[in-house]
Length: 605
Image 1 (cartoon, rainbow, N blue to C red):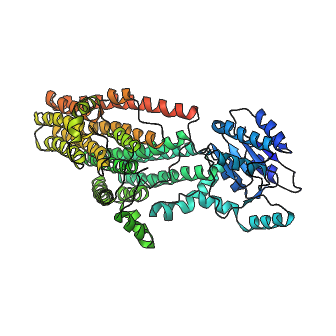
Image 2: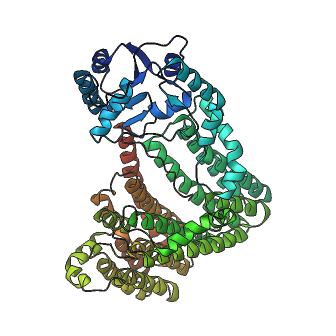
């Protein structure tokens, strides 16, 4: 149980003690710095502790934001400072210094909590200060100031602010105008009944899987039910994040579940649509797989571009300036958010088309919409990269190398090609990756199944992949390398399965690509959570992108179409088991040891 040490002379009629207890704190009173230091030493090291001025006047949600957010080791608002276990020693040292010097760090500050915060700032401890907006947090120095602060508290609806802040600051048109106006109240309902964001996330997954099952029936009633349930799943998907923000229940495990389940829900629904179409005599597995490939590659473009420019210096361009200027015009903001087909718009379109049309029409619309969105976003990012004079860091190059997912073949080849790679011009790295990938995809698509040319092209692809990663990925367009690799591997599997022309080959390919895509998404989430890339043994065990591509093309040469289908199924199961077991082990362990909580407020996916 977290502990709050209430310092200074208690104020008659103050509600601060009850407010701290309502936030889950065990409250102890301390007359001054010496007693505060003593009480601080008695609090178990594995517990959060807060030092709060007894004269504090403010909104309960201001206290909640300042003292209970699990994402930050140290946090403070006026009149209160808190530390999680990882930062307890830092807080203890600052408190001890204030006690020994009698407030020498900031003699003009009357509040002990604020003096400790000032001492932490002087130490460069990195104290988080939440944006309070219209919320009040103050330590009045006299009765008049206290009365004014209480009037300011009464003038602002604490609960209304809390509900508003539960909604993501930047979201899509559909989510903002058709989901969030009521899903925030569902989030509050869940919070008041003790439900956690992870429970709501799981409910969203179960609802989406039921929707996929309804779509798989192949009946009009099933399709209508699937569309309705898909929207319900998305409402719950919005609710879990809003619940996390409303109650500040952020966690490492929760962020991973939210991101992973989003992909699982969407791709499971694609499979359900394909199964439903098959029941009606229409084979759309190639379209379902194509939609998954396109959507995954879109995400890789997002991730790669963001990682390449995460901490780049001189990171400006005329294209970015034009984008910022357009954002100042109200209607263009929503138009630009809609045309990139974020998750709200995408799922709404899928749900409506499922209920009213056929799976084939749904996939055609999805592919056209996502292709346009991918072209728009990628073209804009290419223009930004070419017009900005950014200097990318070693961290960015390492992140891109991890996203590349190079296996033993590419790693070994890269070591031998480093000298040659250094002599190539800057644009050569993405160009080599593109040409090698295009060659293997084209031969898989344009030659007969069982022929040797896809295997020959895959050998060339392994060589070009090695050359592409033989030097640090710091070039202007080097962030395109991971998306090119993803497209090459996924599309090769798709076209080889289609060319096999045997019942079940495309569903098996869908399973294989889904398993590999999960591995790639897991890599992204680890990097974004500052947890590093997956271990090298895992990447080598599953072969790397070039190794898997080579294996699949070799199987297509050596096996009959029916045997190839079985081999794809076995490969999908093996890859899925290996990456899932390691991923679940890693994230559960990270959660148990108290890894920093992660919460994504970025662009809608």
